[in-house]
Image 1 (cartoon, rainbow, N blue to C red):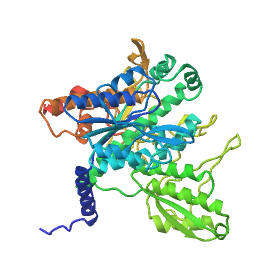
Image 2: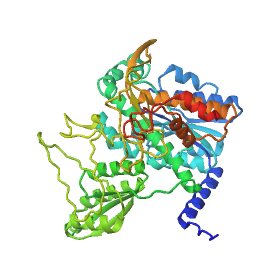
Image 3: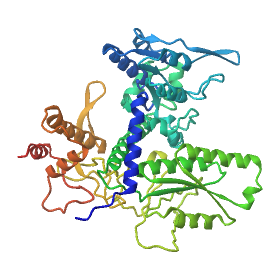
Image 4: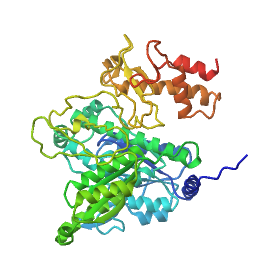
Length: 530
């Protein structure tokens, strides 16, 4: 038998993964309690987790807990050792800051540090609190911290479009992604609004301002969706990176996101949008700047703005490339053809203050081998006014993270009659992968809501919840009851597909129903070997 030569790239990924795992053993563990708005219960849940650690004999010290005027939260600080804050004088005002030196000297097993995105006052050693936390982790101290989704750098523009509020305190996405654990503090928007009205989050005047601005239901719904998607993306990415490193799946590097930037103010938004696409598609990310003769002669202010954009791109993990020439379009095209060598291109078009009416967008290419062009509009919450395609196609509308190969993607159908929900995303994916995998009931499903009531709800969030319940049953039988201890997501997906009910009049898989309709009993029967 002829010996196969080892894949050098696969070996390099494996060595890199093993080195990262070795480093993780020496540094502290980071857990982030993530929410999508103030008052969701991040600090409260963090303090509850701290008391649970104390009950298990873990040494816990609160390095900094935001002094919320919320009695329930304040009550949970009792019984936890509190590190005295460092008082910093700023313009005649004494500010409370986290004392990182005292924390390193105290060096407990677990340190609580609230508000990860906080900007420290001048006079502190580090500019940002996440830099303080990194020092603790390097010293081997485990850290619990809190964060709202709007503080992630890559989501800054997206969140700003929804809330119309500029978030100035931000952290690089890599800090979020390096966390060992992220716990989402999920709460229904209606319940959060009710808490605000009851004065459980802010005082009366501040609450009234919040309810008329940030705390509108449609904004909270959008922020909640962004939060859940970002966390799902993170989980999928971790799973795929681990499998890639261990050689359990084919490593796919076909996608390459190229963003072209200048000193224009809109470049920051382009960079953040491209970063989110690169993260979602597990793609290479390059930011290209064209240095023209005019740019060389530009004033210092223009050059500083461009440098800030390039620093932002670097912070978001982009490769920075500068090319030189007077014809910007030609330089971009040449780099896209020669420099990226990618099989899939993502082009983002942003129209500022467009005139109303019918727009026609023409795409021309000098050289095309084969392929398809897909065009999508963003979330309806991000569109200003009524914007739609005159001749739209419902297919290839499964969104991320549903397009991930690892995820179990569920469509929504009506149990009575079997018709598909018209708002349910349809496949196949743009890479021609089978999506959705299955469909589950998601139209007029009766479920509990606030104030001990039940309502009919529709949508893929309902079908996804039912599918998650089915997965929990399979995990219960396989892992909890010691019947199949190594059951993983891929196994679950295969079992659900094998157990799915299929209509003899349909061809499977298909872009509407995937491999069929969820059927837990048949999946369990397959699992038991019947």
